[in-house]
Length: 273
Image 1: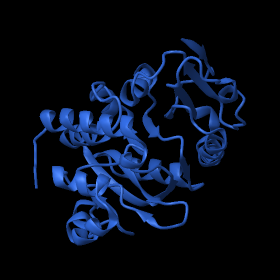
Image 2: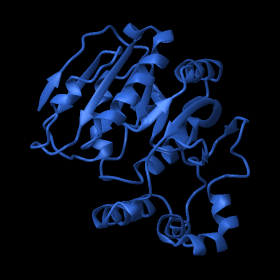
Image 3: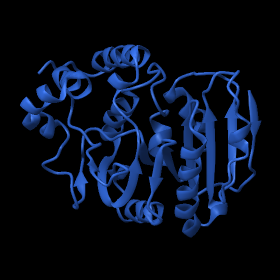
């Protein structure tokens, strides 16, 4: 494992981005928006760690050369240990607040300032979820109610014509009746693309459950976080998020999705319909 460490004082905010064969242009856009959003906080109060889960033979020199106003540390050489385990590599250096961030997220310039202000004003909030949009401007519905197996199958794998027949059901699962321009308290599940934790909450949870290699680790940690603190959807914190469904990523992703679903429903409760 190789480490390039940026020495800073105890941070107000720590941020972890896990990458796997990520696109340099996408990462550069993410870091540019992150640097802009971090500037009002004071860059010296923010610590960014990029954990590279790419295979050892994957070129990674570009990571250290990424232009960023915000200094960052790169941890690499360990291979694909899973999304949750990679994020947990920063557990010993958490700030007062901690952001789990995907490498395909661009945030509004005031996103971090607004997130911090909301957390400061609401001491019972342990996890904040943002308003998310596709690159074309359409709203994403990343907060979820507790899933039934049929919801996951419909949303992830069913043809569009079938999904339309179950539109009302899927809209309910995606909380479309609540998610908009008002704060929503206690959504059961928040998306792992942008999870803004109170540092003490993430530490108490011992981070992600490392049994999940990929998928459902955000479902699991959301439910566990909701038992010790409140979760809030805060629409004034705005992001643009790429990403896509597992079914469009090939058999390996489908296999991981099914495996992680089994772990999730075993750990919590199974709901068929």
